[in-house]
Amino acid sequence: MNSTLEFNDSSITVALVGCGGFIGSHLLRAIFERTSWRVFGVDLDSYRIQEHLANPRFEFLSADLADPEVVKRIAQYPVVVNLAAICTPGRYMAESAEVIRSNYDHPRALADACAQSGSWLIHFSTSEIYGKTAANSGALVEDESEIVFGPVAASRWSYATAKLLTERYLAGLDGLHWTVVRPFNFVGPFMDFMPGVDGDGIPRVLANFSTALVRGESLKLVNGGVAKRCFTSVHDAVDFMFCVFASGEKALSQAFNVGNAANEVSIAELAQLMRSVYAAIKGVHENEVSGVEVISGEEYYGKGYDDSLRRMPSVEKAERLVGFKAKIPLKTALEESLTWFAHHYG
Ligand code: UDP
Image 1 (tube, rainbow, N blue to C red):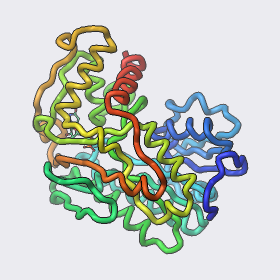
Image 2 (tube, rainbow, N blue to C red):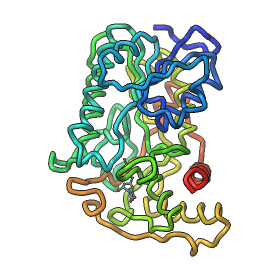
Image 3 (cartoon, rainbow, N blue to C red):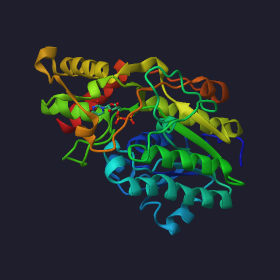
Image 4 (tube, protein in one colour):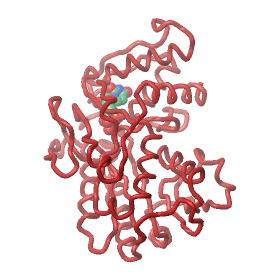
């Protein structure tokens, strides 16, 4: 494997699996803007990346990792970024088996193929692998934190256990060059969907609250909105990827938290902040936008819902090994996301 990837080397082709998703679409644009590389992109959807389909540096294949021929094709490229996943919390309970296939079986097949071909696999895992963290848990440290999940009956953990098993598989697979990314609540334009418009079910909290604001419905605070998260701009996440691309061997055989610890808020605080940002965008008083309503997790998501009460990353390793530090404040990220959402769906 080359130690670093030169951004102006036009002989490099990167395979981007999930190039049409929220993170993938931002990464794809950044690769075209910041490098001379070509991209082999795989996804079932392409509506977020229409503007790139005619780019001569881009080859797009509408497919997924369930097809072994597609897996073989992807693994021909020297760098493979795998962003493909079912990552909609509303589905973790009702469709656990499919969630596990998507988050374990498919990436495992891709890892096997990359181990054979010698490709560098950069795999997107999740901060949810830290499990059922308590309200007083401290910063989550990549190679130190103990991990506790809820019981099997709490099917919300189907996603996290599949993702964690995949990480263990990559780390144990002989000959594989791998890097794992653990995203901490990335937000930005194109995140998830608006229920009933371009997706069904319950998306993650940013899209849910944005939908409620645009529709004039109340923002639902699950179990009172006491859980805390560190929301991270997708642009910071893209910058992290370029730090990894440039760092080569320093990023090999490592899992990285990618998050912004300074952006920690409770979900109730997030709701208030989004209400005030949305009111400012619309030029109205805060009292004129949707209010909040408390709902229980099981009532909202269905049986088997459980939660992490605090998810705060240690960001030391990413800074030390690849020189990355997230910069974008929460309010800026929410202003960008809500402006985009209101314009796109409004
Ligand atoms: N949540 C909420 N209302 C919503 C959606 C989510 O209160 O409409 C809560 C959810 O229970 C969790 C937090 O917001 O405590 C973040 O949920 P999300 O699904 O965005 O992602 P997670 O970080 O749990 O993977």
